[in-house]
Length: 158
Image (cartoon, rainbow, N blue to C red; front, side, top):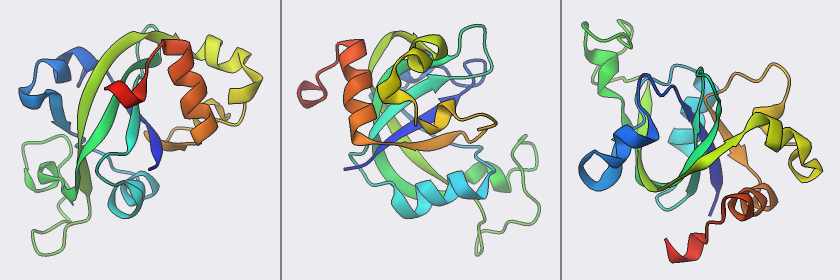
């Protein structure tokens, strides 16, 4: 099993929004960075753990735990000319962009960047790296366990 941190702007899709969706699951649409796309397409597997992170908001941070609920499939927003994520260079027979489905297991208190940065065991997290703007980053198992401990979440019982 692998672990991931996935950023979403709460004005677009918040953890609360996903909890109100059928099966508490959302398509992780709109990713337009090749490295993040490749994580979804080539590395993510159903059951992988996800730290749901709110970005571009008053208090960025981890706000929930989730899991990958469906493997990567073409992101349909790339084909919709009305979508902000439309890509005229994509076609149904040769899609460029993919998305996974993410199921929120539990909303948590916000574990903010200040708290993450204070912990030396989390110093290597990619989300904390200067200049990191990726919306999806891998999380090491030791980081995953440390964050779940902060949040008081027992992954095995979810």
